Length: 105
Image 1 (cartoon, one colour):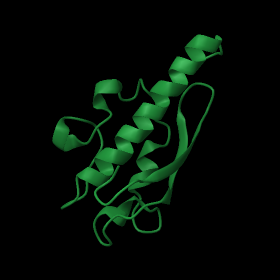
Image 2: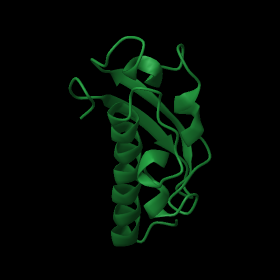
Image 3: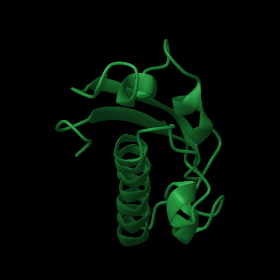
Image 4: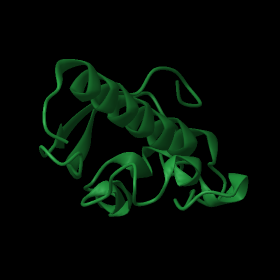
């Protein structure tokens, strides 16, 4: 969850586990702060493209304020942290699913 509620995302991942893209489909974040997760307001959401659980390693999948590799917004840390963690968690779930099914990684 973000600062003002749930943030719904859609993401595409290739067969090697690299993020092709992430988009926010719904949110209630504060205009001028947390809404910078929208691609028409900021290029921040594009920073996931080409990333995987190996780039950065799992520990780096948080915002810089918490020692991670992803920038937060001035005055808004909760929203970007929530998005970064959601993308990371989905990548971990996909990796686990691939491990279970024996699908190529």
